[in-house]
Amino acid sequence: MSSRTPVSLAAAALLLAACGSAPEPDQAETRKFEPTWESIRTHQVPEWYDDAKLGIFIHWGIYSVPAWAKPSGALHKVDSNVWFTENAYAEMYMNTWRIDGSPGQLHHFETYGKDFDYMDFTPMFNEAVAKWNPDEMARALAETNARYVVLTTKHHDGFTLWPSDVKNPNRPADQQHASRDIAGELAQAVRAQGMRLGYYYSGGLDWSFNLEPIVSVDQVAGTVIHDKAYAEYADAHWRELIARYKPDILWNDIGYPSTGDLEHILADCYNDFPDGVINNRFETGIEGDSPRHHDFVTPEYKQMDEITDYKWETCRGLGFSFGYNQIEGPEHTIGPDALIHLLTDIVSKNGNLLLNVGPMADGTIPEIQAERLRALGAWLDVNGEAIFETRPWDRAVGKTAEGIDVRFTAKHDALYAILLARPSGSEAVIEELTAPEGASVTLLGAEGELDHRAEGGGLAISLPADTAEAYAYAIKISPRP
Image 1 (cartoon, one colour):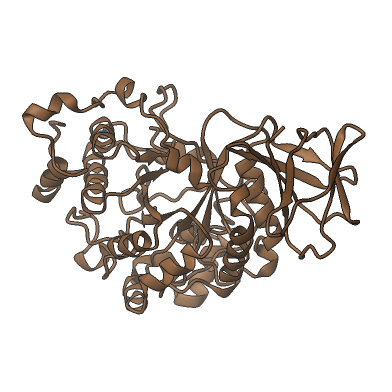
Image 2 (tube, one colour; image 1 turned 60 degrees about the horizontal axis):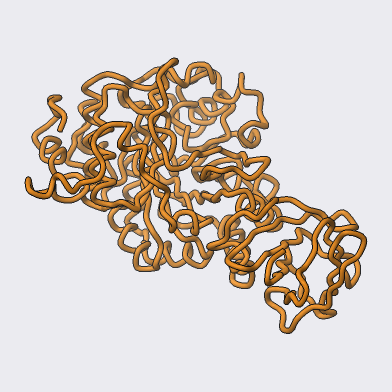
């Protein structure tokens, strides 16, 4: 256990209590993971996470009250030199509000006045969140067929969505945390729906400690706070979240203090919860530091070009923003077809999709987002067999003779060829594919076997005449080639 002085007596207690009770002395030798990176790196990705394929991210906080950002475009599609000034992320409202002349600052001054501080949104958020129904939210998320949910417990503004006993020395008591235990109430509701729970925490960046706005991409690594007192504050927060709510996923963001006690935190967690997972954003951000440890990597608004031999998880919003942005419309929101094709592509290459919803301040999921979730859930109701519990096949990508994109997944003795558009005729010829003699070929959601034959080095498959319109069509071949 760390000898560093904690920020409070409550924090000290949490350092002892995290991840459940500490082992009895005579049990200590049975604990597999030691608080060293060498030991922690022996942790293996659990099967449940590899099987899960789809999670729901929730960005929700004070920023959900102003709910405004210039919809400048998706990350990586906007010039990085102006990204922070013209940020499309509504959850970054506090940062853009601080940048002189930014669209966010001009909007804030015009709407709320120059004397209205960002933290003045706190009572407005707390009043709105009193109306929130966690069971209703969890049911809506479960209908997507998602297997896990990750909540932003503390974003960069430093405001927590649980009643922490670890006090922020830079904020008055009424601006520390939400009036409801959102993290705890959601955990209970999510688990009641059979989904696993993860927590996001902004470990390296906290604008209640670091007051300088980020203006350029080059500044980001330098914003990670390495001050010892802050490191103990962040350590205590993570330990408190783990001890109280026992999350399955630790999803850190924007690095982590180099002076933190992360080795003990992770070793304790893995010992108490061997099937827990952590992401790759616990790095220090210090140039030259060796990598720490992660179970999966987290490309943002990106996906891999090929199958990887390591686990990854794309995170992205349904629109350009993670937090709710009241001015995002259909033109800024991914369509149902593109969303389903995105999930299929990611899964074919050994990834998961962490799809974000940005609730309004009162917890309502905006209708344009809810529509996309319903479409995804309905497609997975029929075709989930080709997604969940699958693994990559020999290759991820294929085409039909008429140029329709195909994605491949595999499970047990079956291959799934997922067509990302409807063939123009009654037959699809999947190039460079064969079926074993006597193989069964079926279309998920349709009855009976499909006629098929070898043709020109590919596999010609006759589709049912009454095939329903869909965003993608999953063909099952068993046994697989």
